[in-house]
Length: 234
Image 1 (cartoon, helix red, strand yellow):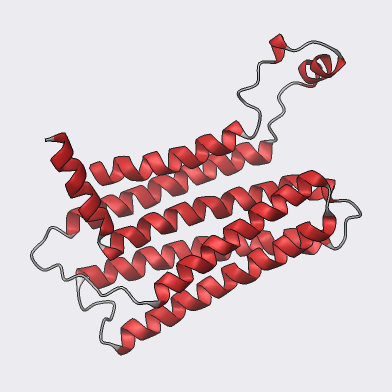
Image 2 (cartoon, rainbow, N blue to C red; image 1 turned 60 degrees about the vertical axis):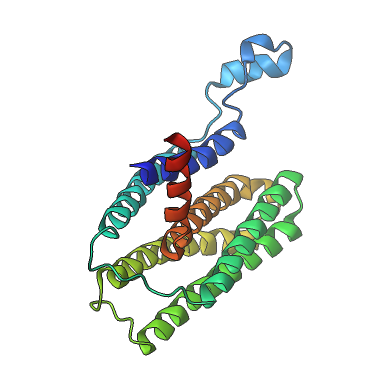
Protein backbone atom coordinates (compact mmCIF):
# COMPACT_ATOMS: atom_id res chain seq x y z
CA UNK A 1 0.00 0.00 0.00
CA UNK A 2 2.85 2.39 0.80
CA UNK A 3 4.36 1.74 -2.61
CA UNK A 4 1.10 2.66 -4.34
CA UNK A 5 0.75 5.84 -2.28
CA UNK A 6 4.31 6.93 -3.08
CA UNK A 7 3.83 6.16 -6.77
CA UNK A 8 0.56 8.09 -6.99
CA UNK A 9 2.04 11.02 -5.03
CA UNK A 10 4.87 11.27 -7.53
CA UNK A 11 2.46 11.25 -10.46
CA UNK A 12 0.20 13.75 -8.69
CA UNK A 13 3.18 16.08 -8.23
CA UNK A 14 3.89 16.01 -11.97
CA UNK A 15 0.21 16.51 -12.79
CA UNK A 16 -0.05 19.39 -10.34
CA UNK A 17 3.00 21.08 -11.82
CA UNK A 18 1.57 20.71 -15.33
CA UNK A 19 -1.89 21.99 -14.37
CA UNK A 20 -0.34 24.97 -12.61
CA UNK A 21 1.35 25.87 -15.90
CA UNK A 22 -1.98 25.85 -17.74
CA UNK A 23 -3.42 28.79 -15.84
CA UNK A 24 -6.06 26.76 -14.01
CA UNK A 25 -5.26 28.56 -10.79
CA UNK A 26 -5.97 31.96 -12.32
CA UNK A 27 -8.82 34.09 -10.94
CA UNK A 28 -10.24 36.00 -13.92
CA UNK A 29 -12.85 37.71 -11.78
CA UNK A 30 -10.04 39.59 -10.08
CA UNK A 31 -8.64 40.87 -13.39
CA UNK A 32 -9.76 44.03 -15.06
CA UNK A 33 -9.45 45.45 -18.52
CA UNK A 34 -9.94 44.33 -22.09
CA UNK A 35 -7.76 41.21 -21.72
CA UNK A 36 -9.85 39.96 -18.82
CA UNK A 37 -13.08 40.57 -20.72
CA UNK A 38 -11.69 38.63 -23.66
CA UNK A 39 -10.81 35.67 -21.46
CA UNK A 40 -14.24 35.57 -19.89
CA UNK A 41 -15.97 35.87 -23.24
CA UNK A 42 -13.82 33.14 -24.73
CA UNK A 43 -14.73 30.61 -22.03
CA UNK A 44 -12.37 27.87 -20.89
CA UNK A 45 -8.79 28.23 -22.10
CA UNK A 46 -7.64 24.64 -21.57
CA UNK A 47 -7.65 22.83 -24.95
CA UNK A 48 -9.54 19.57 -25.29
CA UNK A 49 -6.31 17.84 -26.30
CA UNK A 50 -4.75 18.63 -22.92
CA UNK A 51 -7.79 17.33 -21.09
CA UNK A 52 -7.68 14.17 -23.18
CA UNK A 53 -3.99 13.67 -22.44
CA UNK A 54 -4.63 14.16 -18.74
CA UNK A 55 -7.34 11.49 -18.74
CA UNK A 56 -5.14 9.10 -20.73
CA UNK A 57 -2.20 9.55 -18.36
CA UNK A 58 -4.48 9.01 -15.37
CA UNK A 59 -5.40 5.60 -16.81
CA UNK A 60 -1.76 4.79 -17.63
CA UNK A 61 -0.67 5.91 -14.17
CA UNK A 62 -3.27 3.61 -12.58
CA UNK A 63 -1.98 0.71 -14.68
CA UNK A 64 1.61 1.25 -13.59
CA UNK A 65 0.46 1.71 -9.98
CA UNK A 66 -1.17 -1.73 -10.09
CA UNK A 67 2.02 -3.23 -11.53
CA UNK A 68 4.11 -1.58 -8.83
CA UNK A 69 1.72 -2.91 -6.19
CA UNK A 70 1.84 -6.44 -7.63
CA UNK A 71 5.64 -6.26 -7.81
CA UNK A 72 5.99 -5.14 -4.20
CA UNK A 73 3.66 -7.89 -2.95
CA UNK A 74 5.16 -10.66 -5.09
CA UNK A 75 8.70 -9.87 -3.98
CA UNK A 76 7.78 -10.97 -0.46
CA UNK A 77 7.44 -14.60 -1.62
CA UNK A 78 10.13 -17.17 -0.87
CA UNK A 79 10.77 -17.99 -4.52
CA UNK A 80 11.65 -14.39 -5.40
CA UNK A 81 15.26 -14.00 -6.55
CA UNK A 82 16.10 -10.40 -7.51
CA UNK A 83 17.86 -9.83 -10.80
CA UNK A 84 21.11 -7.89 -11.02
CA UNK A 85 20.65 -4.40 -12.39
CA UNK A 86 22.55 -4.04 -15.69
CA UNK A 87 24.96 -1.12 -15.72
CA UNK A 88 23.45 -0.14 -19.05
CA UNK A 89 20.23 0.87 -17.28
CA UNK A 90 22.11 3.80 -15.75
CA UNK A 91 23.05 5.04 -19.19
CA UNK A 92 19.50 4.51 -20.43
CA UNK A 93 18.15 6.51 -17.52
CA UNK A 94 20.49 9.36 -18.37
CA UNK A 95 19.33 9.25 -22.00
CA UNK A 96 15.70 9.52 -20.97
CA UNK A 97 16.48 12.42 -18.64
CA UNK A 98 18.25 14.25 -21.46
CA UNK A 99 15.35 13.47 -23.82
CA UNK A 100 12.88 14.99 -21.37
CA UNK A 101 15.14 18.04 -20.93
CA UNK A 102 15.39 18.48 -24.72
CA UNK A 103 11.62 18.48 -25.08
CA UNK A 104 11.27 20.95 -22.24
CA UNK A 105 13.73 23.16 -24.11
CA UNK A 106 11.62 22.79 -27.26
CA UNK A 107 8.50 23.71 -25.29
CA UNK A 108 10.20 26.82 -23.94
CA UNK A 109 11.39 27.72 -27.44
CA UNK A 110 7.84 27.36 -28.79
CA UNK A 111 6.66 29.88 -26.21
CA UNK A 112 9.40 32.28 -27.31
CA UNK A 113 8.63 31.73 -30.99
CA UNK A 114 12.12 30.38 -31.74
CA UNK A 115 11.30 27.88 -34.49
CA UNK A 116 14.89 26.72 -35.04
CA UNK A 117 15.28 25.87 -31.36
CA UNK A 118 11.95 24.03 -31.41
CA UNK A 119 13.17 21.88 -34.30
CA UNK A 120 16.49 21.19 -32.60
CA UNK A 121 14.80 20.26 -29.32
CA UNK A 122 12.33 17.92 -31.01
CA UNK A 123 15.03 16.13 -33.00
CA UNK A 124 17.29 15.82 -29.96
CA UNK A 125 14.47 14.59 -27.75
CA UNK A 126 13.34 12.00 -30.29
CA UNK A 127 16.87 10.79 -30.98
CA UNK A 128 17.65 10.38 -27.28
CA UNK A 129 14.37 8.54 -26.67
CA UNK A 130 15.14 6.19 -29.55
CA UNK A 131 18.59 5.59 -28.06
CA UNK A 132 16.87 4.80 -24.74
CA UNK A 133 14.76 2.09 -26.41
CA UNK A 134 17.81 0.60 -28.12
CA UNK A 135 19.62 0.60 -24.78
CA UNK A 136 16.72 -1.23 -23.14
CA UNK A 137 16.84 -3.93 -25.81
CA UNK A 138 20.60 -4.27 -25.30
CA UNK A 139 20.04 -4.61 -21.55
CA UNK A 140 17.56 -7.41 -22.28
CA UNK A 141 20.16 -9.16 -24.43
CA UNK A 142 22.77 -8.86 -21.70
CA UNK A 143 20.44 -10.38 -19.12
CA UNK A 144 19.37 -13.15 -21.47
CA UNK A 145 22.98 -14.01 -22.26
CA UNK A 146 23.68 -14.21 -18.52
CA UNK A 147 20.84 -16.71 -18.06
CA UNK A 148 18.19 -14.35 -16.68
CA UNK A 149 15.41 -15.40 -19.04
CA UNK A 150 11.74 -14.53 -18.82
CA UNK A 151 10.47 -17.78 -17.26
CA UNK A 152 13.40 -18.47 -14.94
CA UNK A 153 12.05 -16.58 -11.93
CA UNK A 154 9.07 -14.34 -11.03
CA UNK A 155 11.46 -11.41 -10.59
CA UNK A 156 12.65 -11.89 -14.17
CA UNK A 157 9.10 -11.98 -15.50
CA UNK A 158 8.17 -8.77 -13.70
CA UNK A 159 11.30 -7.00 -14.92
CA UNK A 160 10.64 -7.85 -18.56
CA UNK A 161 6.95 -7.00 -18.19
CA UNK A 162 7.33 -3.54 -16.66
CA UNK A 163 10.24 -2.51 -18.90
CA UNK A 164 8.40 -3.74 -22.00
CA UNK A 165 5.22 -1.89 -21.03
CA UNK A 166 7.16 1.31 -20.38
CA UNK A 167 9.02 0.88 -23.65
CA UNK A 168 5.75 0.51 -25.56
CA UNK A 169 4.56 3.83 -24.14
CA UNK A 170 7.83 5.46 -25.17
CA UNK A 171 7.41 3.98 -28.65
CA UNK A 172 3.87 5.33 -28.87
CA UNK A 173 5.13 8.73 -27.77
CA UNK A 174 7.75 8.62 -30.51
CA UNK A 175 4.99 8.27 -33.11
CA UNK A 176 3.31 11.46 -31.88
CA UNK A 177 6.68 13.17 -31.52
CA UNK A 178 7.61 12.19 -35.06
CA UNK A 179 4.45 13.78 -36.42
CA UNK A 180 5.13 16.96 -34.45
CA UNK A 181 8.74 17.03 -35.67
CA UNK A 182 7.60 16.65 -39.28
CA UNK A 183 5.16 19.54 -38.82
CA UNK A 184 7.99 21.68 -37.46
CA UNK A 185 9.48 21.81 -40.96
CA UNK A 186 6.14 22.66 -42.60
CA UNK A 187 4.80 25.51 -40.48
CA UNK A 188 6.12 29.07 -40.84
CA UNK A 189 5.88 29.98 -37.15
CA UNK A 190 6.59 28.23 -33.86
CA UNK A 191 3.27 29.39 -32.42
CA UNK A 192 1.41 26.80 -34.47
CA UNK A 193 3.40 24.03 -32.80
CA UNK A 194 3.01 25.26 -29.26
CA UNK A 195 0.17 22.92 -28.24
CA UNK A 196 1.70 19.82 -29.86
CA UNK A 197 5.12 20.48 -28.33
CA UNK A 198 3.55 21.13 -24.94
CA UNK A 199 1.70 17.81 -25.04
CA UNK A 200 4.81 15.90 -26.14
CA UNK A 201 6.93 17.49 -23.41
CA UNK A 202 4.48 16.69 -20.64
CA UNK A 203 4.06 13.13 -21.87
CA UNK A 204 7.83 12.71 -21.79
CA UNK A 205 8.07 14.14 -18.28
CA UNK A 206 5.41 11.66 -17.21
CA UNK A 207 7.29 8.72 -18.74
CA UNK A 208 10.49 9.90 -17.06
CA UNK A 209 8.89 9.96 -13.62
CA UNK A 210 7.38 6.52 -14.19
CA UNK A 211 10.73 5.12 -15.30
CA UNK A 212 12.59 6.59 -12.32
CA UNK A 213 10.10 4.92 -9.99
CA UNK A 214 10.34 1.61 -11.84
CA UNK A 215 14.14 1.80 -11.88
CA UNK A 216 14.21 2.43 -8.15
CA UNK A 217 11.88 -0.53 -7.67
CA UNK A 218 13.92 -3.07 -9.66
CA UNK A 219 17.17 -1.75 -8.16
CA UNK A 220 15.87 -2.33 -4.64
CA UNK A 221 15.98 1.28 -3.49
CA UNK A 222 12.22 1.54 -3.17
CA UNK A 223 12.16 -1.27 -0.62
CA UNK A 224 14.85 0.41 1.46
CA UNK A 225 12.99 3.72 1.31
CA UNK A 226 9.74 2.07 2.40
CA UNK A 227 11.51 0.34 5.29
CA UNK A 228 12.87 3.69 6.45
CA UNK A 229 9.38 5.24 6.22
CA UNK A 230 7.91 2.41 8.27
CA UNK A 231 10.56 2.87 10.94
CA UNK A 232 9.85 6.58 11.10
CA UNK A 233 6.08 6.00 11.37
CA UNK A 234 6.47 3.34 14.03
